[in-house]
Length: 232
Image 1 (tube, rainbow, N blue to C red):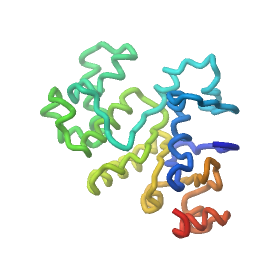
Image 2 (tube, helix red, strand yellow):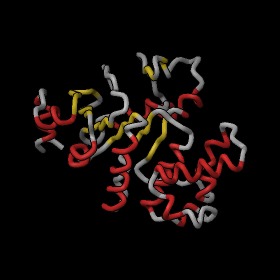
Image 3 (cartoon, rainbow, N blue to C red):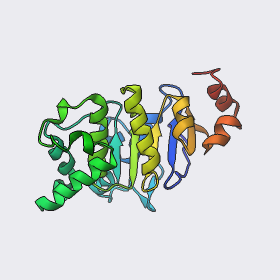
Image 4 (tube, rainbow, N blue to C red):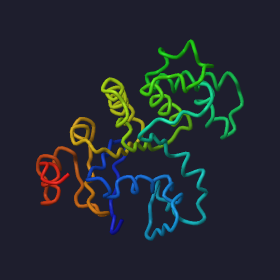
């Protein structure tokens, strides 16, 4: 990636679009410094969150990742119960009160529109849930540590249409409280859910702006070619 210079709008849903291999997921991984899990990575410049350069060597990486809730392409519930999946993060950060933990479980399962489906089996394995339910569980688990950002790396690509609709609707509701950044290969999805769009191509940001403007009146020829299907 090169010459990235952008400001992500607060309390909006930003979609990152572009062809496969253009750097979308790599860019997303910069938000929580997961990019450092790859060998031979070198980062120059600044990545500011709340005015703080998160790549500064003095920054405590756990505090940065606490600000970021992450949904992967496929859900990865922890190998434990539904209840323990939700309380895992709060316990790591010091919460021990059982009544408070129970409140956290109920609140965030409701936030993810999953409470009514699982409230009678909280202590059963999370792996027994459907794929769509697992993704909503992972969303609830991410929200339980009270992040500022929700990051989604094609979070609906492995889901059936009904489960995808659940996640998209939940994103629309959650952006009132969180800043959401989603990588998507689907222009239709970007049209449905995005307030702001970043178009990437070969490691560069070609164009960015309000979703309606970028999709209907792109300023760059590459953007126009992508949204009209000339390149994919």
